[in-house]
Amino acid sequence: MKKRLFLGTLAAAATLPAVTPAHAAAARGPALLTVTGAISKPNRGPFEPVRDQMMHKQKLSFDKAHAFDFAELSALPAIAIKPTLEYDGKVHALRGPLLLDVLKAAGATLADSSRIVLRAVDGYAATVTVAQARAQRYIVATQMDGAPMALGGLGPLWAVYDADKVPEMASRPVQERFGSCPWALYHIEVQPGV
Image 1: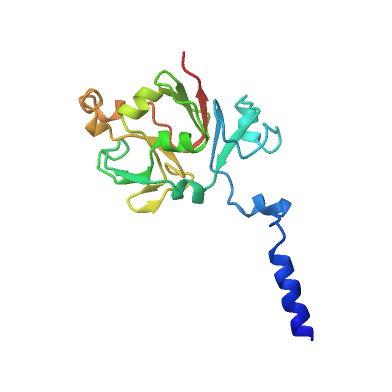
Image 2 (image 1 turned 30 degrees about the horizontal axis):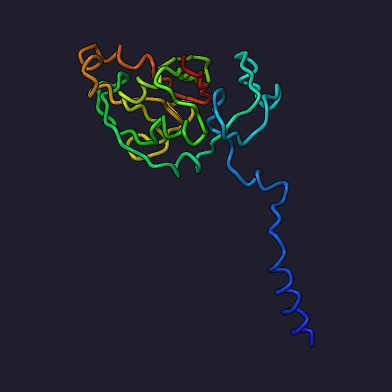
C-alpha cells in the first residue's frame, strides 16, 4: 500500500510546474566580466556600491548588466589566434570567444559605429568601434598557451586581436600594437552608435 501511495504522489508531483529556487543564481560561478550599456539581456540588477566596489572606485554606474562567469564564456564558440606579444616578443596561442559574440550574448545593440569601452581591473580603458572589433576579430581570451590565464598575469580575461594579421598594426613595433587591448578585462560598456 505504501509503495502505491508513493508512486501516486510521485505521478501527481510530476504534473506540477517546476519551481526554481530563489537561490538558483547563487549556483553560478563568480562574475568575471560585466557588460553594461546598450544591452537587452540583463541577468543582474543595477549597480550596487558595495557589491561593485571596483566599479564604484572607477566611477561607473549602470541600471542593468549582464554578468558572465567563466563557464558561460567558455560555452560560447571559441577561436584561436597566435599573435606576437610585446612582453617577450614571442608568438603565443590565445583562445576565447569573439568579442562581438560575447556582446551578442548580452543582447548588445551593435551598429558599426557603436563604441565598446573595454576596462581592466586597474582602471585602464580602451575604446574600439564595433566595425574595428569585427575587422580585427577581437576575442575575449580565456586561455593562453592552452591554460587559463591567472589574475596577476594577463588574465583571467584579455580583449585582444592578432595584430600580426592586421597590416596597419603588423608594420608597427610590437610595443605599439596592443594599446586597445586591456588585459585583466572585467567590464565592457556598449555605447550606441550614431
